[in-house]
Image (cartoon, rainbow, N blue to C red; front, side, top):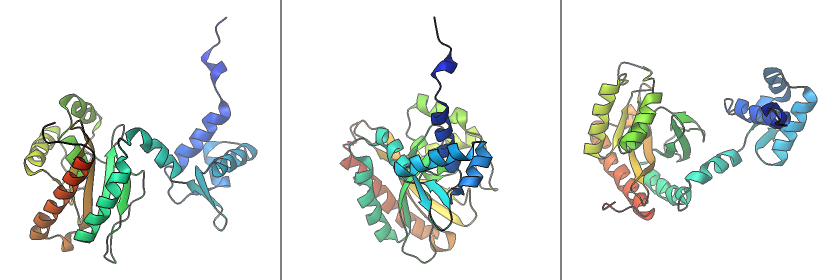
Length: 260
């Protein structure tokens, strides 16, 4: 006699996953009371789930604020399938070198299911600098890393991501149509780097370049972010060369060859 799908459910596992998903939207963390109320879980069950996740290092607990927040263990776990030839270990030292060269925050990200995912950064040397939270999504139509990766994807893969894109307008500089976006990607391929020229946040400029693995596939991107008043046109041209050179170095270390 066949069992229905209901027989194979594990309610507490589903609740535990819902806790992780809920906390992924709250980088500052949430208290036990907030979590149980928002997810409609009993206090006893919520407490057991939270403490189990803390014990397994998936959550961090702050005694002072009484808040639970995600640890980096989940990020590490999610990154493993993408970690071809120790990708993260290869990128980080070069990211720091790039930061030391241009003094601005240097970042690394990859493609997720529908958007980009920010992985890690080397914080800039200036007092005013940009700081991101690992695991944060970034848009593909208006971000430097999104454009950098999309420009070099195989057509079939690019089409799949294009089908997800809503081209949300953030300001007058945001690309809001598929046609204009494809023209922009052609420009990226010509230049070898991508720009976010205040297309999402006013006053913020980003310069990004793709990373290629040993098969020639764009497996991620690096980029720098800085305020417009520090990134004049001549500085952008200079820093773009630095970003491209660093991306090329990382790609070669991942086994990429221009013959691919």
